Length: 105
Image (tube, rainbow, N blue to C red; front, top):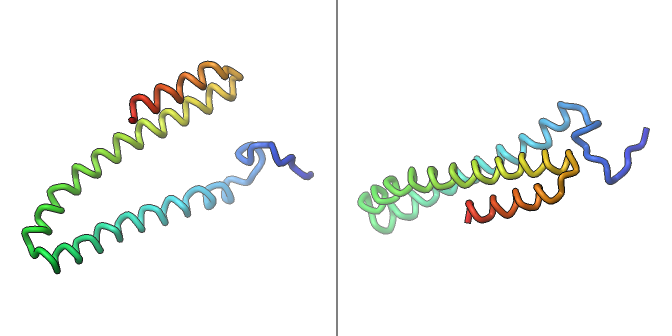
């Protein structure tokens, strides 16, 4: 049976296809982020030496913590937004996005 282009694929697509479709981009993003840190360490180490690498290693956990907080707010906002849209509560959905942007920004 052909599905409408406006239908959400989460409602009819096979779990294995959905898992691959969502997991593969996430894995690629994590690998690129890790490679960024490695390449950053190489360039800083060649230019400024071990003191520069030490400074980068001190700043990296702070960056990771900030990213974790931002992702928590963003993912929570997106989940709540989706729930409100599913319940046809468009006004609450709009308020949720506004709150997420305010808190995250």
